[in-house]
Length: 326
Image (tube, rainbow, N blue to C red; front, top):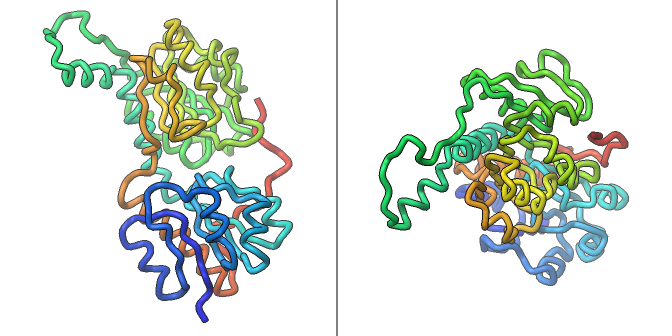
């Protein structure tokens, strides 16, 4: 008898076909997440579950799944939706999909940065509105990036990829991480304490993972430490206080901001929606066909490895005792 597996979301083309010959799949064939009650009911008796960030895996979920659950294969780099310690206590392995979305997400960070600094959203909205316009010396003036100091908060794979791309713009790069990286891994950037990083970053890109230590890390006080007229790009939900970000835009303290995913997705704060200088994207960081196929494929590899008696290629360890600190 084939092991029973729950896949909680419709996957990229070709991914499910890699799984179906080997397991008995229950698929939630929709782009919308499963309602909680349906998720708990569908998890019952499964040997493995392929989840997305919208699926909360906690004690209730694990109890509903039952003792036969062997792996939660999360279709994401982040895994704040999964209680890793609770899974470990029950002998359930947890995996994620790091590495395969690095370049796509770094590209998206730069797309948002360019859109924000050159006011592309405002320009497109103006044209689509049908309002009359003419070129003028002061029309929609933006910010040049060449030579502008760039700060990266979170120097993991994505942060390093963001930093490497800055060389094309001759931008000096600094970063803050839990600890300084080896020189050969710094992608030409220099480590700074968080307060110093904020004070020196005319452009700040946030790529650190969400954790207890980073949740709400960039609050109103820390956003105010950025230089007057700075630009903030957030690629991680929950790290930047979205209300404080909107207030900084409203006051003119920030020139512009861009956000790719939000703390209470799919809801976007009304305060941000009202900001003309905010570029807002619906969580598109990894949204290329190649990357989503790679993410799905890695999740499948993790799942099949465990069901075959092995270890997942990208096993998530229990939460470390040392976490990013300001």
